[in-house]
Image (cartoon, rainbow, N blue to C red; front, top):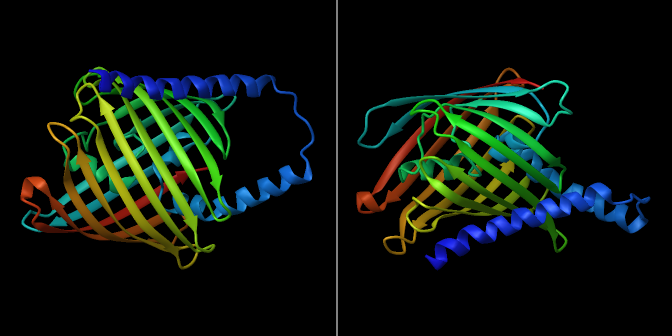
Length: 315
């Protein structure tokens, strides 16, 4: 009980502190940046360029939460899994800016799981039965603060597949330069959902740019709620490399685990992902072979191959 309360209270304090910092930022008297400030900003932005490019190219879900833009994304996948029949999957995500509201309010219609996890970690969550892969949701989002270094958003979401099932979430992101060549991105959310109760989700990304075309990223992701299996965690390590503005790949592996009824690993996975623009700047094809080992399958290896076609529209 004490662990549950501390797990929920700590993220709440983080969000409260972020709100206070934002309020202080609003009344702060701006002064001309010094030479040191400009140098720090230039270095920070140059370090972020590889990460931002890969996040945009591979469509990291964190990008969908913050920008003031309207877009539509359609994805269709063919999935072949060892020992299973050929399967198909279709997803959409639409983001509509509401006019005359200072580009802070957006309506979001989505059949994708809407959370902190990228596609790889989200797939692992679905395999654990922790989310609905085919849910359709409508959300109203308010962006309180938006910048390269810091963001604070709030969202009310409804799920129409199994009844309204309202979901309320607040999320804060903060990026910190580390040493000379890398930086940390800390993302924290607290939420309430009718079916899941109160909970929190945390994500830490450590990005190490090797060059303008190569990046190493380590990611830790965890979730705790009133209905979760204790603390449900995921760890991901990946190498990302671009060959041109049209072609890129990602090679990585992740581990998934939980702490209740006892602490153990539930899944291992290694994968290779190749993504390329085809014909048009807004049309992508993606190939993803992977091998996973799950506890429910006695950690026997299972091969999976996914082909995805994606079209993007909007700003």
